[in-house]
Length: 286
Image 1 (cartoon, rainbow, N blue to C red):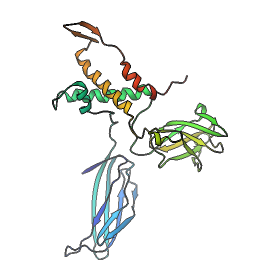
Image 2 (cartoon, rainbow, N blue to C red):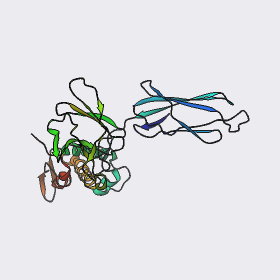
Image 3 (spheres, rainbow, N blue to C red):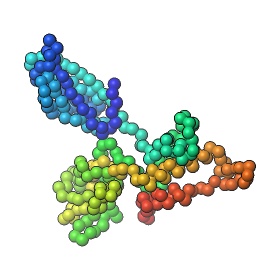
Image 4 (cartoon, rainbow, N blue to C red):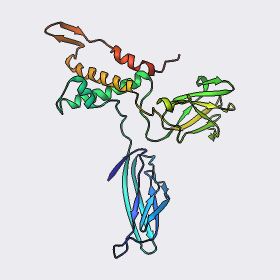
């Protein structure tokens, strides 16, 4: 069974043959069933005789998906299929090859397990240290924000600070007031900061012309959260930190020894790593 990542496009097509094994025209309907039992019928195109191509399916649920091609007319047939959708673990910001080069290792499998663990631990430490993550979700999801101190003014417009999101494609902004209030889509909004995509930066502002932000309500935003691409500084920081974490196996008590210069205590923080991630850290506000 084929496995796709959450948010990946799934391309489906079906060929219809007659009893003489020749491609032939027919009436074809595709039904796709999600893990929660909901169904959809993607539109089909017929680029050539007997070939039916579905619009790309974008899975938005993790689990087992199924589908059925219903063929009627010149040929009667029912063809079923299934695939799995998984939500992959958060990615790292560097790779084994790069870290091994930094460590001066040349063998193919020299403690790859320990190096991989150091890479993942370093990436997640960077996320926590910076207060953000540097990869984008595969699919858009909704998050709710209560304006409060998140709102500032820019001229006559209100600006709502939100989490980083990677693209404005598929962005949906809704508002509600009170407990259990109905969500209402906002027709006019603008993502910021200006030209974020040109600089490889995420969007994390929603400008509200006409001051539609409910100061005592809440705002629901559907977007692909995270950064559009991993900054080079973060990749280098992950490489340095992974190398440092890997070498800690040689100093389990926090002390590294050498016959020539004796024992020294391993410093708590790496100043180069701190310098690399400093521009990306979100300051804490009391």
